[in-house]
Amino acid sequence: MLLKEIYRNARVVSSGNHLTTVNEFTDQIPALRPEALIEVAYSIIRKMDLSVDKIVTEEDKGAPLATAISLFTGIPLAIARWYPYSLNEVNQHRVNLSSEYFEGSLYLNGVCEGDRVTIIDDTLSTGGTAISLVESIRSCGAEVSGIFCAVEKIQQNGRNNVMNKTGLMVNSTIKISIEQNKVTVIEP
Image (tube, rainbow, N blue to C red):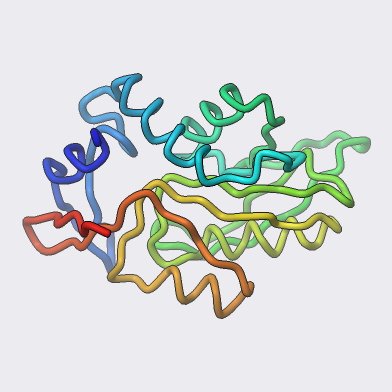
């Protein structure tokens, strides 16, 4: 699997209070190979409920993966954006977000009452993004059918944080452990 290779070769940097990786998949350093994105997208598609109404992601690093999954499945994509629109007819929901990388607000558009939604993201670390998206989707009157992340950083306990706050299990393609100068891919 290319994703495992990418993370075994990732560089480790400090992102404030945590160690994180810089790599092809999340940072496009080097540029993301289409075959890597396709491989990860299909690994998630094989596990997903394909009868959902929408895919939701955040505008940053999850967008390439969620876009690929939307294209391959034909499921519409809704993205939580960094800024609101000043259009009265747009039904947008503010998402308060506290994650490993960001504190602030996102604005979720395109999710309607009664929708069944799958959340797609690149990385699960603290669980902050997933928790915020679940809360926002639920506030729209929609249901979260599943949460899928390509990579799970086990040190930040995100899986348990999401389960404790939302009651939902996160599905990940690979799990990693990060040390000062090393990323270890944990085999299932």
